[in-house]
Amino acid sequence: MNGKRVSEITKQRKLLDKIKQHGVKVEFDGNTAYMSGESALEIMSVKNAITAFNRGFDSAVSALLLDDDYDLIVVSLKDYTNSEKRAMQLKGRVIGTRGMIKRRLMRETACYINIYGKTISIIGQIDNLSIAQSAIEMILNGAKHDNVFSMINKRKVEVYLNGNR
Image (spheres, rainbow, N blue to C red):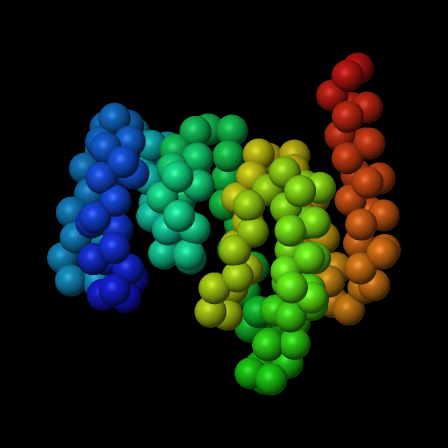
């Protein structure tokens, strides 16, 4: 955690109050957060919420991770390239012109996506999260955007049909 983000999270009263409601105590010492609580599951949820905030999500979206129905996936661009120039190109492919690809991915997968530093982070409900992760990985591997959105639609139909049986 960098110093700027630590000072920002300590100002997020709503997020910190929600964390307290989950029975987890968080203390900051420099750039390190220390967490303690009764439930390992609750501590993991709080850790994910703090990680999401540090990856650039606002406190309201980060707080979704305190709900068992939501999870966080962080995709590292280092897994796709060692080149700074190529990493910028990959981020550009995920964002699209004027952010259109990113907005469409978020709308069609019902997930929150944030690109920060050398990572792409996704917050969503479990079924939607795997669809969003697959879509982003396809884009990072060079798939055409049309093919990515076709896959999203097919997967959404599969999830819908499997959920209604």
